[in-house]
Length: 193
Image (cartoon, rainbow, N blue to C red; front, side):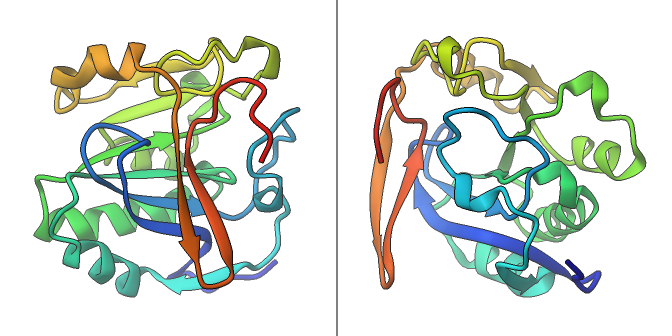
């Protein structure tokens, strides 16, 4: 798989969701993941293949234009596999919309994120939800897929929502698309899509 440095490999976008963090959020799912978690809710986004190459500047403009959002949530696939490009995207957005908070879900643990691009991305986000999904640990609690996953508040911007983030019940939204449907959110245990 070869991508130009100025493009992200996007699996899916959702310009407005309320299930992936506090407030209305712009959700980005990237393509490609090195993990193969049993029960993954997005197995089509695991293969390292070109999905939708999107210029970083174009995506930044699209997000900046969404006036009703309060934040951005990035998941996948595995965001850390495109960490350098994502940090560039967030820096570009933050220059014009500094009020937007950023949540990133990763299968890596916080301690594993030691390479330069990963550290750059960590410096741009407010909340990291880390750890691989473990199906039998899905307790339907908090903004996470399974109980082993940890919350790392990297800034204090989302601390006012800490209780909601830690203890909310799992929920989903279904968005109708031109070519099908998109499920956004964290499905309850045993949910079949």
